[in-house]
Length: 241
Length: 273
Image 1 (cartoon, helix red, strand yellow):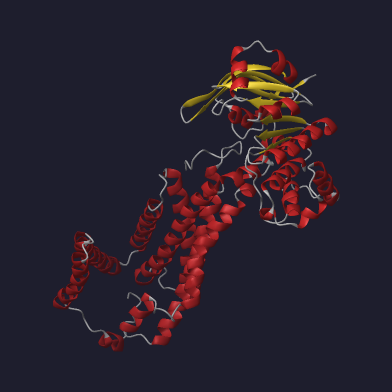
Image 2 (tube, helix red, strand yellow):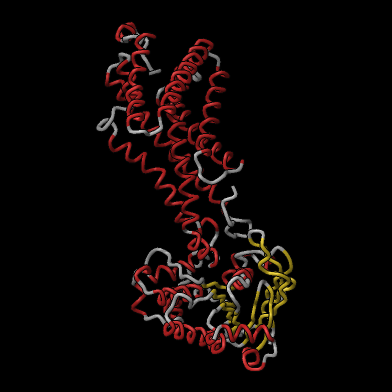
């Protein structure tokens, strides 16, 4: 399995505080990687580096073996999509929201409608919702639209910052199943932050535990949850039960 | 007041306000001071200082204008216009809640220079056809009205854009995350800022003459001009103010928005313009 992202000695500072401190991490292509850890651990600060919503103050972030800042940033962001914790709707209908993603790239491909149908199906949104005003959807539906919109540009990677935090457990589970399926069927690399350990356990291939800007433990999810000898990981897992 | 016709009839029509008359007018400010006292608003001192400043500032301006009109040199007029522009720039930027750096002064000053400068040249060369081109009797009051409107427009545009960029941070970043340019990502905040800064002008066009008689028109009528001449001047003034506000706010918002983003199209943590 090849690494799609490699982070070397990454440091980040926000408002004078070190939020990432010497991060060394490899993220495998085609896998779902879950970032877990207490709030303030630096999870969001980390994934924001992967599509350059922020740049680190030190160290290097490589995407496909090249530093991220060597890619044209707009191109990079179309290849590395981002789904925010709180879904953001653009003005207009669901269809408008989805069209917008391609319009931004000045991409007027003829199969636009085909693409809309495709991503709505992938995000498990009913076709009838296409004409609905985005603001009138439920939070769960909005989050699915946000995922669908990120998929419009056919990204290779999807970064998700606690995509289920605003959802009730049942809706969250269904959304995770969707993400899981996307990873499997489309070969999409997913890096997601989650505060729900069950989510990480069920949906992810690899898990990274962070604490105070450092990586405590990283590895295959099954291994981490079942056999780890790391005391801090055990303590975190117990505290979140 | 300054666009007075100098014909004899006009001169005869003006009732002079003597120093004694002026002191009587000061009595009026005492009404406001009394209200403040009665209701314990604590504004007495401000009213008195304000009144004194009004007298001193306007008298000074009066003497300066008398001097500029008497000298009648182009460079004196241009220097006066630039000074007005500079003061207006600092006033517009100074009203911003966010601490602004030098960039914001440059942006605002340049935008007002373009907006007001273009409008002044258009009005003085094509509409009013001022002769000689630098005649301070026309150029200074016309520019004053233009730059005053541009200043208000710029001030609203700056404040609204900063506010919208902050309030719509998540939306702007969602656009960026999809690979948007900074122009695309800031489209909504820019639209809101432009609307907010243009609405007072639109409202002004709607009610001009119905709610209040504009100051310049009133001044001309008091100075003895025919109301029809005064009205024609006022129409010119209203249109030139609209143009100046439109150009200035467009330049200000389209330029200022850039300062919210880094070169790598990241949203800066705060407006550090």
